[in-house]
Length: 101
Image (cartoon, rainbow, N blue to C red):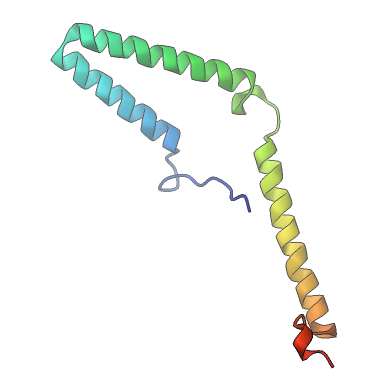
């Protein structure tokens, strides 16, 4: 069953944690060697631009409702319907065929 994505520590999304580590690594490389830091920064910039393009075109920033959110909500509703059906059928007959007369 799909589960809604939870944030790390309630306020920090994992994508920002990964981005922060990437920027810190780029800064460490730049302090070691300027050319190596510039190469890492360029690579990081290209990755950010690709992510931004995909997010604007297809993803969460495109304004289209998320399919995953709808799927999670539908599965929660189905689970609630199952619980309701189990309570209703539990009063009528047992689910175990061996318990029936």
